[in-house]
Image (cartoon, rainbow, N blue to C red):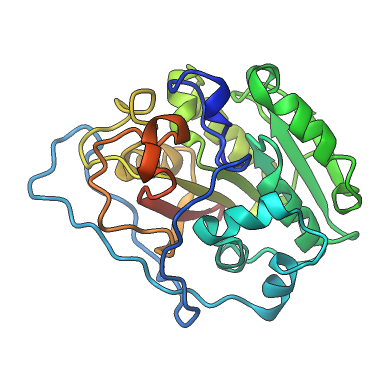
Length: 288
């Protein structure tokens, strides 16, 4: 998704950067690949023992196929305006999305990421685009419904469900499930995240991935700033997802911003001139 258009709602509500949020580009020259990481061991609740290390953005190789998807002439100008800060080519390549895959996006919002996924998996693939009743009522119904009319969205199945059990029974043996810039919002929405993560795990086939991108909180803050700053501690996310049975398969750094102090509200409405410049982590979890 991105999460929600904040201008229409209080800053405490989900922030959809997929519907109208420009972002400052980070360095994304395509030359390197991500490295698999061991299971996270740091305590989510413990305060950091040293000053946090803010990692600089690193390049990641984008395949020719994914470049063509991003550069497609019939993508909307609004969507293309978001690309500089979202790096969709790097995202698609890092998570390995290809033609014929069965994928889902949770909190699809207005559908920026869902459309990219639909274009990538093509007519032989399938995409489930999920939104909760809350998101639809607050902002997503109109842009999501309009996007679903586009030819590129022909292979997308609309899913209206709560986050605890986000996917229908037919969404099974999936290659990937995406959640983009929204996991932090499930905290203040009172989602049973343990249940949600287990249900995501069940929906994936062996080897399937949970693709997770979110705004970085300061180490040791856990989930405490999900509502106030729209951020979440990366180690907390790792621990919660690993508890559902996933293996941390890798991470990428093309959305890192070492200049982000992580102590300000990154929702578009509250961020003002900092809008779109938050440090973001990109995690790939795998069902073994």
